Amino acid sequence: MSTPRPTITKRPKIAVVAMQGDFEKHIQMLLRLGAEAYPARTSAEIERADGIVLPGGESTTIGKLLARYGVDEAIKTAAGQGKAIYGTCAGLILLAREIAAGTGQRGGQPTLGLLDIVVARNAFGRQRDSFEAELKIPVLGPEPLHTVFIRAPYIVEAGPEVEILAAYESKGIFVRQGNILGSAFHPELSDDDRTHRLFLSQIAT
Ligand code: GLN
Image (cartoon, rainbow, N blue to C red; front, side):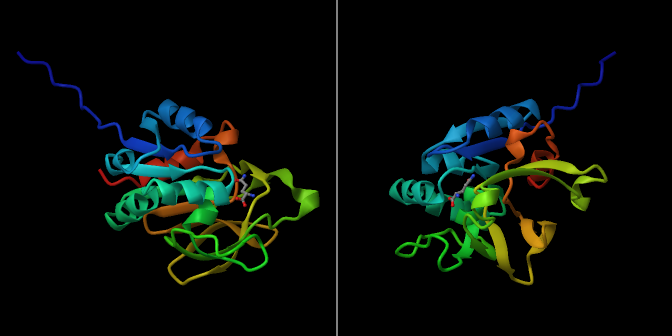
């Protein structure tokens, strides 16, 4: 008699863009959740992924390196193929359609334009350079999420296809548009992995 085979669940491959910034912690969290997460620096590494994370860091630096290595085009192609993408903090800025004037758009900082939002950089001001907050985020369940903001942006304008998943002081800080997620906070800096779970649940299998 043959024993039933265990169901083999496919481990999603997640490219965590590793040009600069806070990519290691995303990789660790995604590995803990069972994904095959790896640092990505080339378009080939983006192409073989099922999903992509754009981490926090310095958006001008990351943006320049994305363009230099052609990784920007690879990310846009992946988005067009319906792959799940999640940008946090600087990653959210890079996904935006536009950066609000006067908030660091020196010489037209290029963005990927995958989220129909306008963001303001470093938007919470000096006194709130860095802060933490417990936020109610219905899409993640009833328990509030402990969130960490570091020189964070917020959303000043969002198009009709953008769902605002959470706000802080009436400013949009967590959004979704189809397969693209973006947050102004750093979910990889707390132990709560519900944001990464939401991202993984958006991966087409
Ligand atoms: N202030 C950074 C920027 O504008 C983002 C900060 C972060 O990613 N923690 O690019």
